[in-house]
Image (cartoon, rainbow, N blue to C red; front, side, top):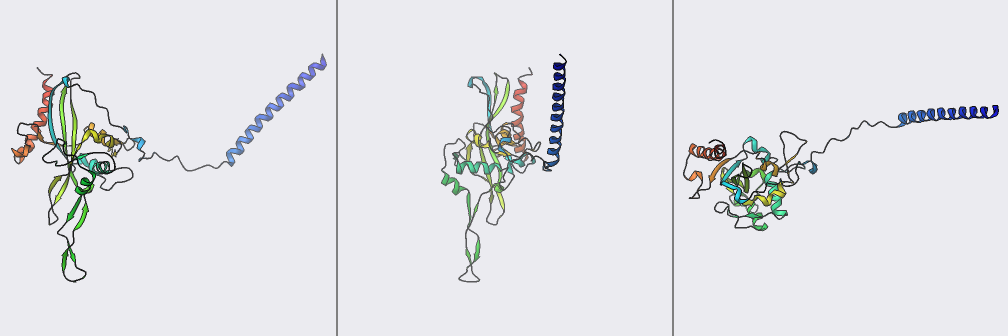
Length: 301
């Protein structure tokens, strides 16, 4: 009996010794590892502002389905987006594409020349998308030849000869955009909504003396066809660099400044054809107010 009790005491002592030895060994190994491991002073890299995955919606924003029977009122208007206005600067810049950002014109030009986006010719007289253009026609349209340029003849020093200079229309040459859109009231949801139908870039028109004398439209683009390309192109977000925004989101949320230059009318004429001077801007504001007052009047009997 005494022998078995002594054996158990010895076993318990050995177990306690090995347990304490194991704990001490673990502590020593941990301390050595912390002393020998190199401590890196390099922090985790910040987020990549050029990562395409950071676009909030890298796909076209879904429009609510609207039945034709639910449209109780609609009006078609044409607007001008002037890129000289402060709110429209993200559409104009950068003038040269960067790793992160491209101007709206560069996005459209790449989609027209490299992808399957379709452009339509004769933008002044035809905004119904009836004259599709080929890629060769688009490339020819985007090139301007200066036939008045002269240089000295290398074979006859002192004599000047005409040497046409070829220049391509770049994003810095685009001053305005036309947009064609429909405003309608959906009686099912009781909301006034706008849908952009087409967009047309306007390049500056330069005289023979090199002065800018106006703008000229290049081509119309059916906006719903351009939305898949616009949704993958980032635009500068002035409110948050960490939340990138696409051009499609910019247009759907109407984060741009514009004015009306034409509305649907029986004469199919622009405001400038029957108004002059300050009356043109006043008529434009009247058309905008008419749209918003229609919705407001529905709730005031």
